[in-house]
Image (cartoon, rainbow, N blue to C red; front, side, top):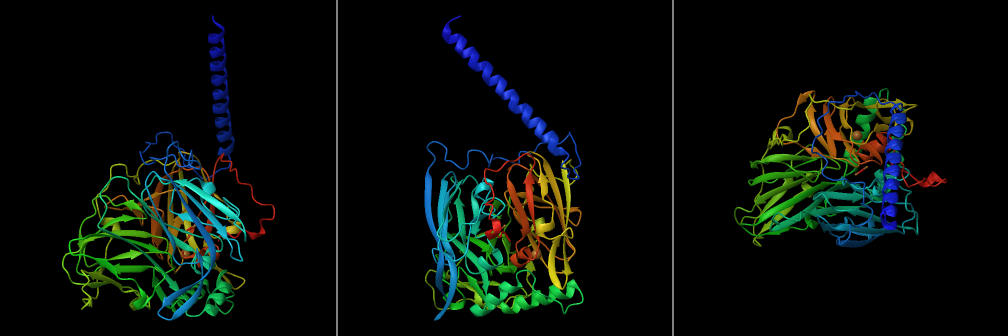
Length: 529
Ligand code: C2O
Ligand code: CU
């Protein structure tokens, strides 16, 4: 045998040995971790669904050879926003603007966003809904240290999943997102034709004066509600208080006449990307127009049918893309029909062919809500209620008074007392959320898309909805399913961020996952709620 052949054989033997060591280590570690015990229903006969098309965690913090790189620089700083004509509000914004710069890239791009913080408090960026490596997820104390004043951090991820997403600070969200630290992340599909017009519309609510905003901070942890006999009374009072206090509604940071008209031409195919960055659910109406709701939370709705004069409900954290063709040259307003108090401030003018003369008045009442659990056509790779799951979790969303303080709970506990939800790579997971409180909870899961499979125990019809945020109203229960395909440290929480701050948040950990992030020993500045 030649010297070369012997060397080759030796290398081969080395590779085989180290591979088996790795396999052995993986097996033993997962065996050990099994005893960490979730109440999993173990089952070997799972059909593995073609759901995960991406291996998110691998090779994602560095570009692949030849991958186009798109770089952005953001500075978190104080700014001023002319919210209505002549009315200036102090804000915190990425580059001092609200919303922050839209990050629009093409599927397949590698995105690098360098954030420098010159605000007096630590901040982060969380890429809401985007499946990326958890080291880039921006949850302080969970997957990164918050970026302190004067520091910078570069977020990197591969934009492999097209759709409408958004980004926001995850440090003290109920304060920082409220102050304006948010923007849109749009990943355009590589193939498929572009619409003629593509508008991003970010909804939000503000308080009249900045003093109110400061006083809201005191309410973040529920405040002291000593005068209430029951948690139900306290939560209704808090809800009502905020409903009235947040009395300026905005679209892309502007209210009323200051909202920029959407300029279109007759015959245009228009895509509207609605993002709810606020804390109230808004139901939008595109009057007299044939529309299709083509995606939710960035994920396509299979076989979306044309509907007319139906309302589309958009909860905090959710996104909906609506498409329509401009049918005539009559300008009109997109408006909102719901019990919110200040909808007249967010009529969005659609200016057709520059026709300023008259905008059609909508005036329609008692419109029906589009029922997404019966819209579109199911896809073949849907999870079902009947199939086997490795892990089945029940999550009860509740409220309680603790020493007069209103708390928002998950299974009766608040964030810092709650044990993490445990996932295992490649397991199929089913979660049932039940809202046992008297207020809405839009629940958001980081790092994964889930499918909505049942409502109140009954299978949903229509298109398979792949989402990251789901509204659960009082007394409702929803069952979702997903594949644990993105090992990392994550969280789930209510996206009514005051509720998250009041406790409705939980860590999610993968068995055997080791993060290369170690918590700063002086962890006091991390505030993930
Ligand atoms: Cu949009 Cu954990 O957040
Ligand atoms: Cu909530």
